[in-house]
Amino acid sequence: MSTQRHDTRLDRFVDSYADRTNGMRASAVRALFAVANRPEIVSLAGGMPNIKDLALDVIADNMARLIRDHGAQIMQYGSGQGELRIREKILDVMALEGITAHPDDIVITAGSQQGLDLVTRVFCDPGDVILAESPSYVGALGTFLSYQTEVVHVASDDEGIDPAALRDTIVRLKSEGKRVKFLYTIPNFSNPSGLTQSQARRREVVDVCNAGDVMVVEDNPYGLLTLEGEPQPAMRATDPDVIYLGSFSKIFAPGFRVGWVLAPHGVREKLVLAQESATLCPPVFSQFAIADYLEHYDWRGQIVTYRHMYRGRRDAMLEELSERMPHGVSWTHPAGGFFVWLTLPDGLDAQAMLPRGVNARVAYVPGAAFYADGQGSNNIRLSFCFPPADRIREGVQRLASVIEGELEVQEIFGTRTTRPSRLHGPSVSPDLAS
Ligand SMILES: Cc1ncc(COP(=O)(O)O)c(C=O)c1O
Image (cartoon, rainbow, N blue to C red; front, side, top):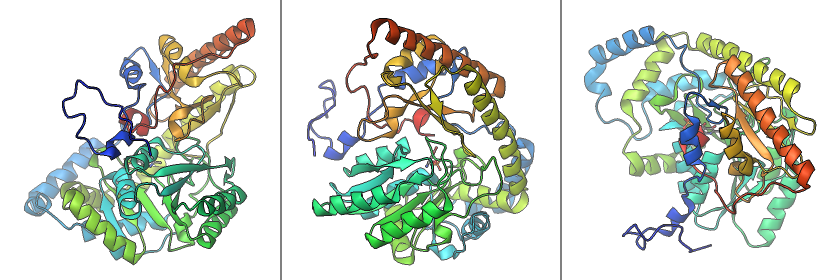
């Protein structure tokens, strides 16, 4: 493990930080994202949910009633595991994806991001290996690296993780004496690829992990945001040993910071201890607000509204990509979630191109952010969740022109575009992560 520090001598505490802070690196594209928030720029970068259409007046009335009737309780410290009232309601949410469980086996977290942190904390020592899809969620990679683990990407195709590659990777790592702790996977509408793992693949992947004594951590914030057909059964629906992460961020609103982990009994106990040492208890006020929302609001109807809105945006992006992108560019066709994953022709570098994109008033996330090992240089993550459809179309048009320009340069000079070395590693900047 590298002990070389990346900090600056201007910080007088530079020699005092724990080694693990070395894995916590700010993204060097952050500065560009600050620019990307300017109104003239179409940002296809951030994955913020579009919550503008929530019925705020109804929610405000419900909150006022909640505070009036239960204020003293909901502003008090609460249970380290989370409030029973919300844990019971979460069973209804998970039932939509075929999961049956007991409220005792749920731990409430500050978003599923904290779920990732707690799971890594209770399972991983420095040097342990975590397996992840290729590509994988940047916020998870940041958490894993902050615990000084080694992330190994497993080859994946349009149907998800390749089971044979998974088996070979587990065998190889074990023969090297490595401790492989878990496979981290986003089977539905993955961030960043937008792809969904087929049911057959899910079964195979779980079987390979079970045979290799590797746990499966299923992260599923987008599963209910299907844009075609009904939600798929979760991996956890078929195997109770799968550790399942859920979130209200995309099906309601991220600002409450409420997610959950569903885990086998022994794991759940450890997670509660970890939660208590991290926060004493997850935010009580937010939990009651969400439980109340689930009890008094048509939350299923709200999910249908979200699906309709995101479908319009996804369709706008896919149509515009088909019409505008130069030959040689390919992309995924997500059946849900927020993201499209673009592959540029060989030789183009998404990171090097980003300043030209911002100059052309469009922003995206370069693909390398979604790998812990430097892959992804010719990939781009595009988000269709936040800008309205007409802005998405404009953004794709601008991006297409930028790519055309890059291809022209490549043709004239016969060289690949270059980028400054090691601009960034995985980062947990919210601009990128969400
Ligand atoms: C795959 C994935 N997991 C986890 C998270 C974290 O979500 P939250 O902490 O808001 O629940 C995100 C956020 O975008 C995500 O895309």
